[in-house]
Amino acid sequence: MNTNDLRQKNREELHQELLELLREQFNLRMQRTTSQAACKSHLFRQVRHNIARVRMVISEKVSKI
Image (cartoon, rainbow, N blue to C red; front, side, top):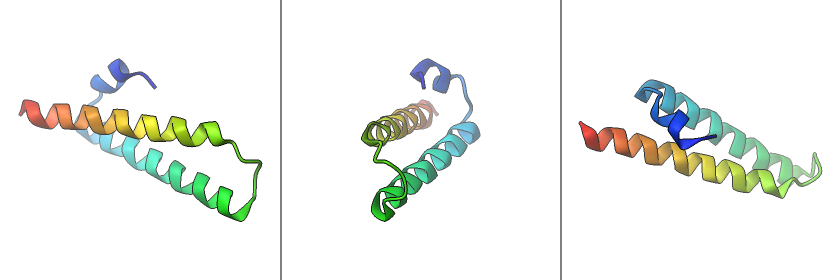
């Protein structure tokens, strides 16, 4: 996920992206606790960083108004 790509989206699309990432983070945590899949620890970091990127772009758009 690229920050420039996120900046081209509108606020509604960003909120939708954020919800999808939060669901993905929740699902990864549930898989880890139930030991369903092999622990792919790199995915946790990627999702956290993507959530931070989306939140940063949302806050930039809010502050411009």
